[in-house]
Image (cartoon, rainbow, N blue to C red; front, side, top):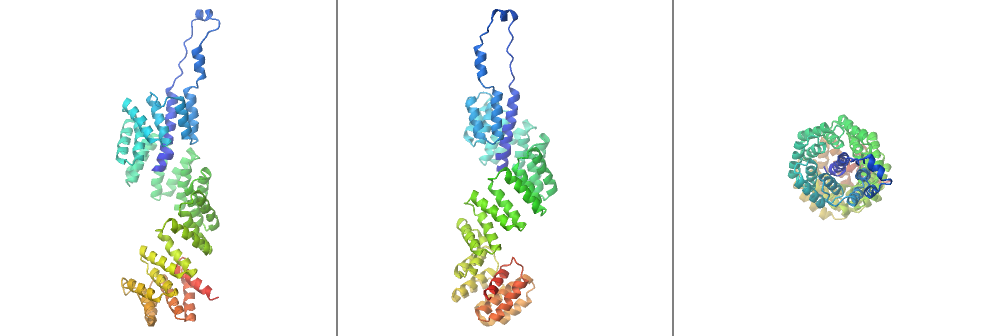
Length: 477
């Protein structure tokens, strides 16, 4: 909604008003003098006309202002307006135009004052009511905004932007059927309305009707090839169909339109990860960091790439940055725990596995936390921690038996039977990893190696235990 108001509605409205103002002003012809009068005056002195010619015609000023608006220079257009006209012009047309420029420049109080004057002079002025609706929306007064827009479309059924704004209000309320009706009304009023096409396209995208949505976004690009958001949205339609190459191509076009738009680098970086182009994805996240070093998102993605590239020190560095910026970003807890474990910083690793368990009830997290404590030489703390966790786990759960094994070393036969009876294949190999760790702690290295190898060969690559089993095996080399 915010994007539409800032990038489409306000700018489109200003353009409409420019074109409208141009048609209002007519050139009034100067009455010709009678032939006799002309004969009497050899050199007619017309100081008024000469003085008037020195002034730039209003329509020329509007054309220059329009050029500034098209280039996105709202402040410059506003300065030109205030230099050429009085600060508060008398005509409602100029006042509405002035309010649009003020809104575009973010001077909302001044815009509201101008619009109140218009409504005082002309209570039925639909353009003024529409601009007031924009201001109400920016203040978060959704009901007042909706009421004003209803008045606008009732008085002026050709106001495509008003219908489109109503559509976004319904969209935000999750009344998607009503939103669709309003977007269609907007297109009926103006078949080439970019905001209405975008609204309908977003609805189709939400419904996963990718081909139909793509047609609308392509239509926007035909109308306005500089529409960055149309390329972004069309990229999403390709993503929905797993066509990552075309998705990347559209994101690249969007970035060419606005090279400083931060989120485009994040989105293209994610697409490149899907394509397996990790080093190219790194370039995008590096660029995102240059644009906004305060955001934690690019660091999180970059950390994951470094992890996949086995550049573990760099990954650990970036995860630390992520958690400095966003301490509650729990997605980083497990990778931090893994990397710290591999860095033999066991006590700190244990803390992150404990935190992960607080956010997500996965029983391998407390097992890893306890294992780290044991490797840190804190067997008592590990046993006490597992005792508290085990009380909450059903006894038929296989992880219960592994936790008991960690506290009762003679329980390995029962734990092994429990693992063999486990029906979930992935969980079975996860459990074998902890059995291997138990044997490693007991000094039974050959037995531990056997189970680590079994886990490494059979567990999916994205499973934590598989990665750690490979790490343990490499340590024996």
